[in-house]
Amino acid sequence: MSGAAIVTGAAGALGKSIASRLRRDLGAVLLVDLDEQSLAGVADSIGAHYVATDLTSEQAPAAVCDALDQQGWGVQVLVNNAGINRDARAGSMTDENFTTVLRVDLVAPARLALSLRGRMGAGASVVNIVSRAAFGNFGQSNYVAAKSGLIGLTRALAIDWAPDVRVNAIAPGLVDTPMTAGMPEKVLTRMVERVPAGRMGQPEEIAEVVAFLASPAASYVTGQTVVACGGRSIGP
Amino acid sequence: MTAPFVHAAPRGVGIEGLEAALLEAFQRLREALTAGRPAVVIVRDADLLGHGDPADAALANGLLGLVRALATEGAREQWIVNALAVDGEETDEAAQDVWVQRLSEPVGVTGVLIRLGDLHLGRVPV
Image 1 (cartoon, one colour):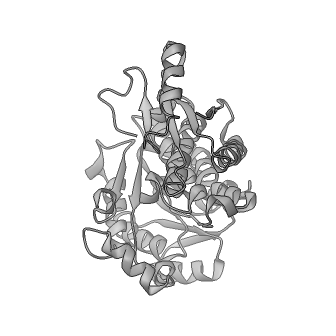
Image 2 (tube, helix red, strand yellow; image 1 turned 180 degrees about the vertical axis):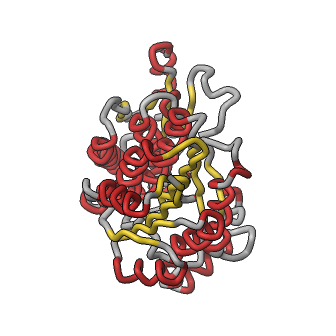
């Protein structure tokens, strides 16, 4: 059984870049997202297979497994990239927005990783996409808790699954995607000013870090969180 | 000084219990902070490092994130919210009480993690 890369949230800009990059290294890529129309477009453009499913549903892991079985694929790389935010100050944060973010950004990736463990052989790798915001951010108590929790999960699974499977995380900072492009220009300018690199990151730059962590070049790296934020996490 | 609100991380909630556990912590911390009370969240250092159950690790780190997010947000209102990592069964309860009090004092410390014991030595910052 050959191994594929699974990329969740693959219909988005970052997910597409990650999937495209892993396609070069692994060949077999399975894209996962809720948005079937966009997903089909991405799959077509990079030559990948896809499964459209709601990762927060209890049936999602089975849907992913079915798609793998159809191709006769095992799991070489799992990239838990799907994520959402529902920002609000603590005082106006609703319970629904708090738990929805936790469900998508923390519970779903945990469930998927645990469900796929039996399909991962020696040398497989999991990469969880967290965020620089996991170290604390204004108006994102739900998102910060979820992404920080995912860092904890990364460490625990890295210990549990060693030496066969490596588990790491990447904490991107501000990345140039349609979501950031939709921000008010003044806000975005102020945010970029706080990045020592002086610019936003490109999705392809994050994808390169994913590719490194997923590859044999990182064979001695597990349980770690790589912060790819242009220096924002150390900036003034 | 107002009595601190202390929230100890529950253990054994499992992956499916993470949402409820983090929501409850958020609600209680928000209620305490907006009422002007300092708050301290107690977690196990071993859970922060990922030693043991994955859900316990996710919860401990999620709570630490919550502390940092609320400290960031409440800086102007001078919210005091900190985290204390203890060493499980080995923790000296008197030392724990001392640090809960210290982390609740209005001395300009917020969003901070104090790690009791020596488990953190030689390991990654969390």
